[in-house]
Amino acid sequence: MKIFYTVLIVLMGTSIIFSQDLRKPPEGMVLVAEGGFIMGSKYGDHDEQPQQIAYTKAFFIDKYEISNTEFAKFDPNFEFPASKKDNAAIVTWSQADAYAKWAGKRLPTEKEWEKAARGIDGRVFPWGNTYDNTYVVWDQKSTRGTSIAKPASPYGCYDMAGGVWEWTADWYKPYPGNNTPMEQYGEKYKVMRGGSNFNNHSFVRTSQRYYVLPEKISNYPVGFRCVLDIE
Amino acid sequence: MDNKLRPCLLFLCFLFVAIQTRAQKVNKFPSKTDPLHKKVAQFDKLMLGNHWNEGAIMQHVIFPPAGLDRPIVGSQADCLDPTSEMLAAYSHKYALTKDEKDRDIANQIFEAILKLEKVTGVSGLVARSFNQTDEPLWHEEVMWYHEWHQSTSMPGYRWLGDLSADKFTSIFYGVGTFWEICADAEYKDKAAGLLDRFIGRVIDNNFKLTDLDGKMTLWGNFCPDLPHQSLNSLEMLAALKVTHRITGKERFNAAYHMLIDRYQYDDHQINSKILFPKEWRNVGDDYHAARSLYMLMRFEDDPKLLNKYRMNLNRHWYDWKDIEFTWESTIWFVMVYQVLTGEDIMTEERRQAIKDMWGFERRMKEFNIPQKDGSFKKVKSEEERTAAAMIRNYWFGRYYGIIDEKW
Image (cartoon, rainbow over all chains, first blue to last red; front, side):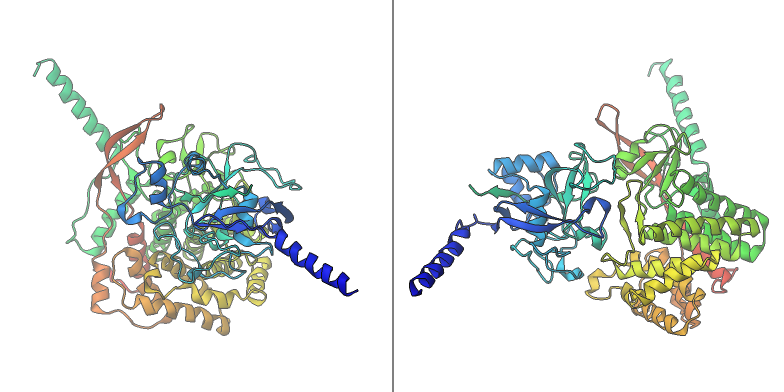
């Protein structure tokens, strides 16, 4: 019996060890573990419904949005005011996609973005369920990570609520089981997430979806962060 | 210069000036040293002459040749603000003068707000602005994002969607004031009908402004289930109070008390004014709060609720009492505070600021006009901003005895 318990404890211990992803995230990235999470919302816009359990593989994601300085390393012709070198870069979808590929990464899917922002428990905001102005970067005028309270998402990402909107890889399509018709669904618009505090508080919810033409962002401040697959 | 070329050039110059003059309609500006009533009268002519778009008042007018064949086209996202200000202005003016001409202008402006609903083709959905045109206008691409629609209910018109909380406030403030002191029986019914449909649709959508796509607009959140600004709680309570008063329909009263009893909007609204950190103070938001409190505090008679609204006003006054009169709305804040509290807070400095009110300068500006081939062409043209707030302030002040007609 003693041997049985010893083996069991060893097995349980090793299973925990082996179930963890032992790869260290590259600098500036955090690990998002494989598994299910609560995606969508019961009370947001109709395109956030139905709320569901969604799954992702493990992946790494940038802690912060890509800055102007970082983007300019990829595109030396990218212009920005000297005072905004640390601000999130505002770019079109194809610019964001090209940067991600250049960096050996890719843009996050909606699922990946939402999981990185809210963790597994279905929280409304990256930090919990209550809004406060001090939790967010007001808009692109401020630099990344400069909110007063500096709350991180459950996986350690910053500014996933407020700051600039963020590109995802996905076209704007209905979630499985969503039967509300919308002429914008299809492969015309890309989904941006995270809101900008220039808009109302509800737009910085982790489940909020918004569609925009990938190459015509006009007045929308849209930036991005990248993900890296784990082999 | 070639003798044949010279007359041609002269003729072209004459043609250009003639077109400009005709397009600009009103070109006479008052002098800064003129008495207030004279300045207001002249800016009123400029607004009605140059900014009039089938009754709607344009916030920004660009004159030909900036890619245009007619004026009254510019950035149109905020047109409901000057439209409601001119509606309120003419309502106050009519209440004083009892001149049917003033009432007729107010009626026409109100009809434009009705048209802003009609053009969307959806009952209760109100546009930000409209243009009579079959084709997209150049500024649609560069001055607002892709929220312009071709009207299906009014062929030959295009309209701008994505209505926001501040324009929502413009509607109940302007229409409410019109109903209260200007509209005759027929127009009272029309005003009640409009607010019944408009605010009723917001209630039906769980206190959200929703667009044609069924999604909440970027700034249209009053929803008790969603996080929203305290200011939006105030605006929603004010809208419901005004609409209940005007329509007499119990559903608006029930919604008002539901938001208070179940969701504590009465407590939430107290903090509409962000006082600290100081750099977050926003006089733009104060304007929406001032219009909401002006309507709400005069229509509410429950002392407990009035006390909470007064708390909100006090928080604003903490900032307003020392405010610099940098634009017309800040002058209006002080007048609103005096009207709502009955306190005599008019100092000589504030009186002088009212007397010094000014509308706008006409300026030359270079516009980057998108062409059909995707390129851009730089064109210099004249533009005007709005004097509607100044005109509203004047007649508001006259109505409440704050401004002397001899000023």
